[in-house]
Image (cartoon, rainbow, N blue to C red; front, top):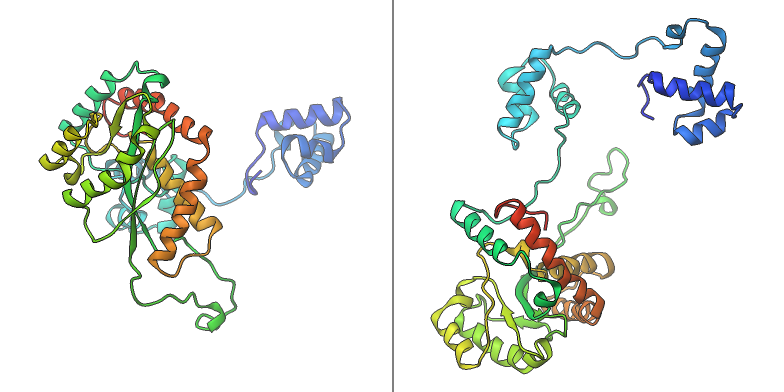
Length: 343
């Protein structure tokens, strides 16, 4: 229980019953109600020495609010009008005589806490409509149907690590060598990879080199990686999924699929939340940061990513779980009429 908050009538009633009716100890009551033993002891002492239950309430703690109800409503309305506004802007525009911390407290009291925003592709009305139509069309697909789809994608991994770090130091040690987080003043580059999987199997991880993945490089990738493993991915036939990147939808790429008998699964634009392979990339990034020392060059980075990919994809149950999640993804997309989902 937070310090400085009065016990409610219900809490005091439970304490009274456990102590004086059930004869529990202060320690047992504290463990049961998650309230400090000292608080329970003081409350029981007041109850034992007072006939008037209202006298059991300790004196009010803290100072009164400096903001009125009208000020509080104004703060909340301004925040709800623009969820990305800051407490500093609100304080400067409407309440310059109070502190920013007071504005922050009023927002928290009204359930408006600060979080990192979810990052999603931008959706306009047309894209939402197309996503909704796609979801409605596949709403009644079962896991058996989704198991006939091979999902593919490319992703870029960076050599730099941007996760927050903290240091324990004394005053005056800010620039001591042991307290400084040193980094190289140059970019080490990225590593772009491509992979595909289905419930039946997966392709080796392919490293995309030479800059942007244009139609020519993409078709070379498909010829050297996808086609040799197509029977592993789709042994009984099925469809190949890809997003709507320019290289994927070019005329020459469509001709390549037609000539090689690859049936492409229709996919809505700006819909990474519907693709289970996006979860694989996220999982790989977490494992890379958690279990591996950051590689020193892009070659070493690709070798590490290959190892993680093989470890994940070699787990048939993991692949099956990803495929089975498609029913929930489509249901969630239809429920928001093509808008943003939690995936």
